[in-house]
Length: 173
Image 1 (cartoon, rainbow, N blue to C red):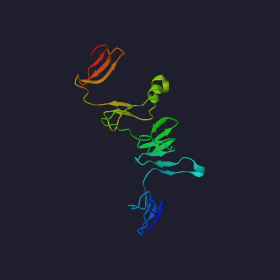
Image 2 (image 1 turned 90 degrees about the horizontal axis):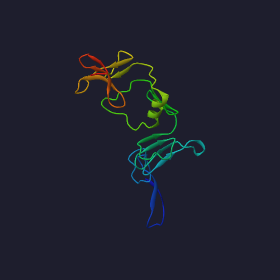
Image 3 (image 1 turned 135 degrees about the vertical axis):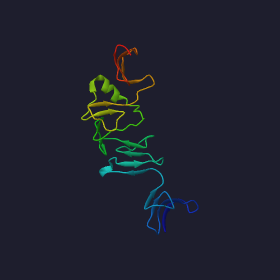
Image 4 (image 1 turned 45 degrees about the horizontal axis):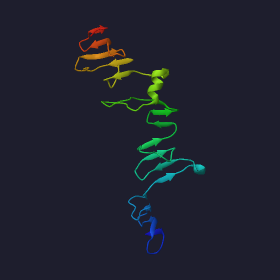
């Protein structure tokens, strides 16, 4: 085993370890894998450009050196298995399956949607469906009041409703 250290002889600080097993440790004397780094690690591109950082808390930044409290923070255009983010636009090449989860904290995306950015779907949209069979396919038991589809005005007054039994109400339930 080889260890690189610095400091006074009675207070050496380990910098790097090379084990007989071939494992290399930076900031640790007992690396458990081929490369183990104790602390924050940076992998940079050419001429010091920002590449990848893994913080001591386990947070990963790509294209940033400061991922904050996010487990994964990507700065720049991104592709992830059919999901693409380009200049703030989120595109899905496959299905978006929420299954009882909510999308929260969407900030500017909601503002853009409301102010005319719109929702652009290139396929079928299913609510309560894993394989929608129409441009808009809504299925489910509705809520306790028996609504399958319900629209209201800003005051909360029902405008169009479709009940679970198929009855349609316009201006009434």
